[in-house]
Image (tube, rainbow, N blue to C red):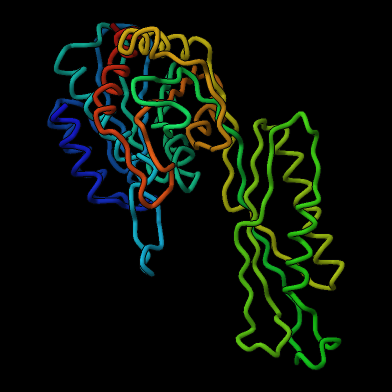
Length: 367
């Protein structure tokens, strides 16, 4: 456990934002090279890393993936990076797994690839890694995430996490400035934006679907209080448990926003800032993970598969390379008060369990 904690303590204190994980990736790549892996840095011009361990014998190619980036928060009025989603824990677990598998001669066939990915929070890190060829030869890809206490406590693990699709939509409304005493001479961008918020709130998909659409940012200021504002920016967070549901929801949101702008005589520029697909999970990969969890934590430690409204860019790998068998599991760690909370913390003893589960997975596929 000391090695895992050593990695975690270092990475935890150097949080870096997406595509800026320079110290993080350098530390990880140096450790992998020292262990004896063939390491390729700066995948596709990013901070991404791929490390390879060859058995010298025919067999499948198994890849383990960890994300490296931290989140940006405003704390005490300061913009800071902080590891509040557990990516420092993920990297520590996968790095230790790689070191120990090599030292123990844990692969007897095929090839083991270790992926350290940037910018999961931006939703584009997995795309960049895939476009850089990181998984072109991979047969099975496994990833994991620490889980909140209410979802999975310490001593348990989830063999398959079914994440939801998500999209972040930004709309910039353009009106016409005017004096507050003469509103008829202007076009109030604030009114158009507020109407769009209510229009999106009025969207109704089938009650049988799991979905949500809510405004999460509204920026509008003319600089004075007696002037009609000419510009307003609104951002919405969209969620759907199914990719088809997201397609429908996104189309309805865009229509509501465009109609709202038109109703007030404003124009609008719409951008999709981020998209992540719903989970794509393979039964064979889940079977490998479930057997590994049972080996490490016993029957009582293996939960049923679970669904979450959260999203994860891991599934871009499987969207872009559907021939790969993908598995994604959740590790209980008594994590509170919640992911992305500025004071998120968890039981670090869970990291050692994560290493054991991943090592068991590797042995089952390549041993």
